[in-house]
Image (cartoon, rainbow, N blue to C red; front, side):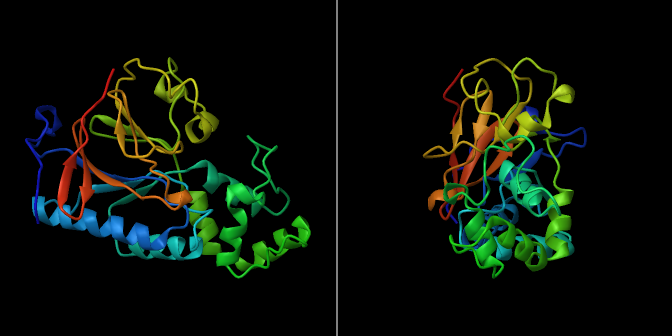
Length: 265
């Protein structure tokens, strides 16, 4: 396999001398085959560097828009049961799905103006993957009742287990971002899964490198203070996987690592 790794980041070693290496995957959005391909790239890199136990962080948004949300859940549960070193973070679409499956609540408490069954959000594609009739002539209450019967308890339990944020090495991993100027321990979960501005335009040093998704970009972009991994899988584009050593980042490709240098600040 062709590799263009460059030198490891000097600040990336633990107190035991091991390079602090973490893998991360952007928003999945029901794209099972793309998720499997991302995992295959990660496993190839792990084998090449001899680090089979390195953590793999999934930045959330498991469901919606893509064709096989059910398959994504089944696959990640199988990985977890096999002992894979995976972290799966809570995204806004995960939270909307869980809220919809609540016995009484159809909408997310943060954005109760958003109907998960509204076509652009992708909830209908998710429920269709479970065999639910999501025809537009059906009432939301009927779809809601069928969804509660169709989605397995193990999938609901997985949604309930999702947390945010996650810290490892020089990075803080989160679905959407953080509110600038607010200490990490005081961040609102609503911001962590929903925020765009003022986070996206802020160029200040946040301390750790903030690794996030939520806002699609054409390619993985390292802004110096943050790293955006959402490359639009929910819209039929790529699902990207990276390896991070310290604050150095490489995109994983079929030809090996491709450096993702910072563009600022």
